[in-house]
Amino acid sequence: MVVLQLTCLAAVPFHSAAQSTIQDFDDKVLIDLSHHRTAQKTAFFMFLSKYNSAVNLAVPAGLFAGGVIGGDKDMRQNALYVTSSSAVNFLFTMALKKIFKRQRPFLANVKIQAVYQPGQYSFPSGHSSSSFTTATALSQAYPKWYVIAPAYLWAGTVSYSRLYLGVHYPTDVATGALLGTTSAMSMRFIKP
Image (cartoon, rainbow, N blue to C red):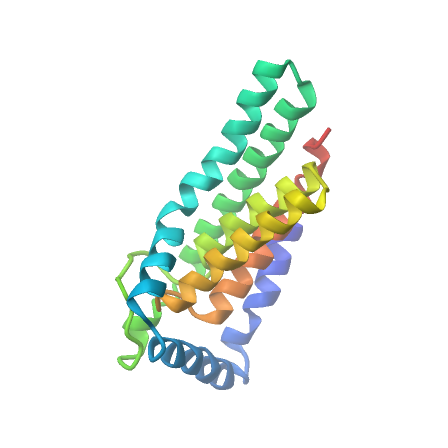
């Protein structure tokens, strides 16, 4: 419930007097990013976006396998924590996409050129929410700098890739990050 409340609060600008200002900011960021694309950066960010789901599945699978092989109950419980956080996040993300039905940037503004054109709705960013869910849950399960730093570097870079590729607005990405973080925090009771 807390996750839904925080996410709805983040979405309030779409229905307020500040809508035009926020939309102008969102558009400007994406148009500016599209003018600075290179083939190398585009390939790198496409790779991150393409394999985000694989990483988000591999983390709990690896934890579970490690827990089974090593006979480590806490590690298996952490796998359940990451998986449960991801499931909650997925449900909320899909529900919010259906509720808000925000068009993708390249559909709403002809000046925004996307590298590719994914389906579904734009708000919130599923890549951002899923990567931040995994990063937060993993960081809560293993609060060491050498886990936290790469986890959030991955999540932040995946989120940025969505802007760079022109498929999400900054507000989609920020709300996705907030949703992912709160999804993982809301499931902390599962953590050993």
